[in-house]
Length: 466
Picture 1 (cartoon, rainbow, N blue to C red):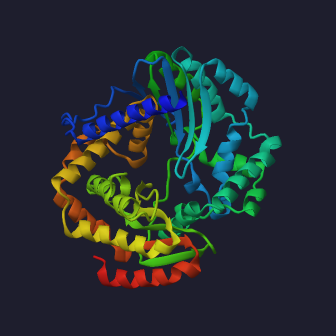
Picture 2 (cartoon, rainbow, N blue to C red):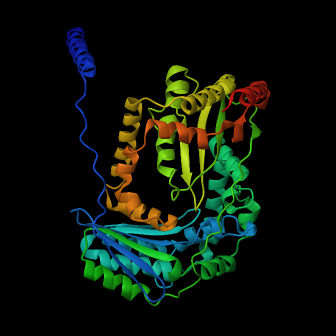
Picture 3 (cartoon, rainbow, N blue to C red):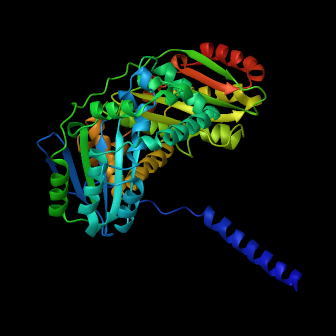
């Protein structure tokens, strides 16, 4: 009986597989014409204390999301305050002058939502969601969290210990180590380039320092409130005005623009016996406000930034040197950088770098076919549409515009601008920005095993790179 069932199942599987094989041979239908993204009608207003607000009705789901974004992040720390912004953000979640952490959680839960605080390089995000009818109450709770954090002394040790554990875990991860050293090489005189804070530095932070950092850096003039989803516009505008108009103006928005370093350099960090080498290979490029940014984004996607990219096909699919290579185009504040990242088998560290170099050279000497580029452009345009398919996505895109001082047309014309990129532009962009001889290379791996490979690659780089 068991054998009969197995035979039937096997026959069904083979029939299914045969059908799948036939289906895969069929030419897929052509996609529709790409359409530009239309930003939903938004209401914007400013308060007398400098706070800005943007409200975007979006979708039919009866939920509203609110994000209070303050231009305060790790870039506002001094060298002696490395990590202090994270401590401030983590401690903010522990309650206000009138609500402790448990009361906050219970109140927000009754609204059918959640609230969190997160800290990035440039900004701090107080984010929350709730059922639409409770939108004004959500704003009240979040405003209390933003304006009146208690910073309880009783939670300082726990918060610091958690933060130390997080950083110590990162110090054990080759990818985190490599990325940190890469940023340090590109941004040596800027907070973007700082390494992980030490345990000693974290232990030294006091509640007084937390309070002082908050008072010096947080204020209405650096804050933008985003509201998206389904909500009553009049009620939400009144809630934002009532809850935040009395907050102090605080310091004016200010981020020191980094001056990235472009140089041919190789940094090797030893991990004796490591079965893999972690590679980060890149250089500074332009930021999103530059006219070349969109062609650069498409070029990145074709070269290494998508699963169907050339470098991925080469060193993953064809050679089997790595499982998940990728390239990144990082948009920081008024600056940017590009890097190819991969965890490769130790014995093929040099071969992987050689193939990455070959793919960059090939794209710089020969334009891609229109068919290959069309697939990449469809991928990039599709990703963009997906990013705008939720209220949180809309908030993220609007905040991107705000941080980088970009017009609405950056979003509204993005699909059109992606599809306007030509094969010749991709080739020219590669020649202009992907210059291997000027790239910084960071490798974390077994130094004894990879040193001979790296020396050979360096010689080839000097001889063969564009």
